[in-house]
Length: 152
Image 1 (tube, rainbow, N blue to C red):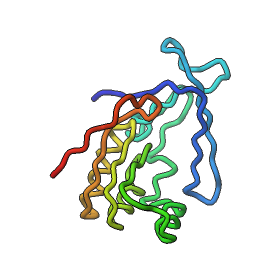
Image 2: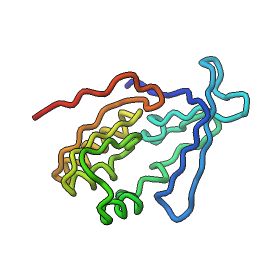
Image 3: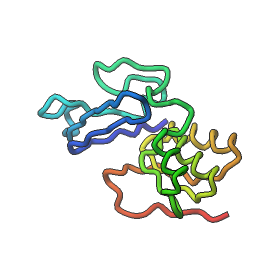
């Protein structure tokens, strides 16, 4: 099994899918070090989705804390208010819950994530929901070309 990990420039990941907002800052690291100059650490998201430790000193978890099995409240609100139009690109789609929800509402959806393990689960969830979502492995911090969409 291939492992996918990424070096990040400083980014903040904000998880708004829960009542509490969680902010994680990741800093670009060199390939020879697992920590950047600020002490921030590289996160191996594929390991995290496999239930393994995603980085040095980080305990493994059975499932990611954001895996609710449901779309985020904000995405549901945007759709309900009519703010989502046309095709949807879900960058960092993870387990696909938002992508699947929007496909159920009639949108053509492409979901990108760095973790093949997450996308395997997302594909199964989409099949279980009876919707078509195109999922592709991609590092959204290094997108150089648009993923090609397969047509049925």
